[in-house]
Image (cartoon, rainbow, N blue to C red; front, side, top):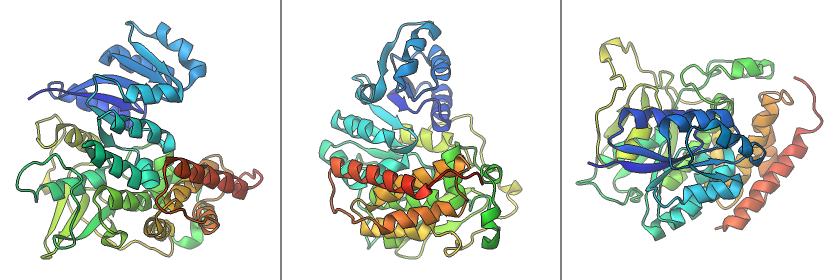
Length: 400
């Protein structure tokens, strides 16, 4: 038993905070050697003074000069987008936890793979945009890509239980003979029972009140539109090597069953736990072993019911748009992701209505000609194209 040395990208976000909790909970198995944040210099410094990693990175170079004065020790400090890549390749690190919101984690993730680091992926955009590239490079380098999203971590656990013994090939193809379906669960968000006729009246404040998870604003809105689950469908397609047609979604309001795998014989394995990101983070770090922690166990006597409902596909088009993007492949998933990021930002800025989010995404997708098997440059060009088109589609600012 030894400690795994980890760099956390996105340390000041909700996933980063959970990672630090896990490190505190299982210090004999997890050591933080690097922390990176975008712009929250005070929070990064506070975390560093407690954890005392060897290296820090602040992407916002305009605030970088503040960092040394907030620290009570002298770590190596990286800055800017280049610094994010450099800390991801830190010599001491064995694993990089990528929890950067949006597309900013793609370059450092690929750099970490090139440097021989295992990835723990919480930033689903990485696999949505560049899943083919990421998984190919990981296989070439012989490194693992372990899922931190609760749903994909659950599927990974269910599939891992079918192996005769632990294997370093975490990305073993999921054969048609063995597995029938991967079933992602979704809470349904705050509007799972809201009539579509009322969607235009949904306010930002209502959309930010998630019934189950405590998350950042972008992912909370994605949960409300179900784009979060749509992106996760594409992510599962690449992580587990399955066709999009075998990745399905079911609404599960209690968020206790985090996902399921249906096998060829009709048996279904599910992973259950409380809604706490510390569970999947710990499993990604300690896999293939399980270790005790201070997290609360399930009390089945207090679980009154577990509900499962088919999604309202017509009312929440995000799922079908994501399936279309995943089946088409190429650069279309990157365009979907880019357009959605712009649309969500516009909604958070009160520039567009709630249903306009998916309307805008569909509009941009319909205008894109997908490039098959894109390299990184083609992916980034598609991302920028999608952002430009979506920004133009938002139009003049009008308060809603």
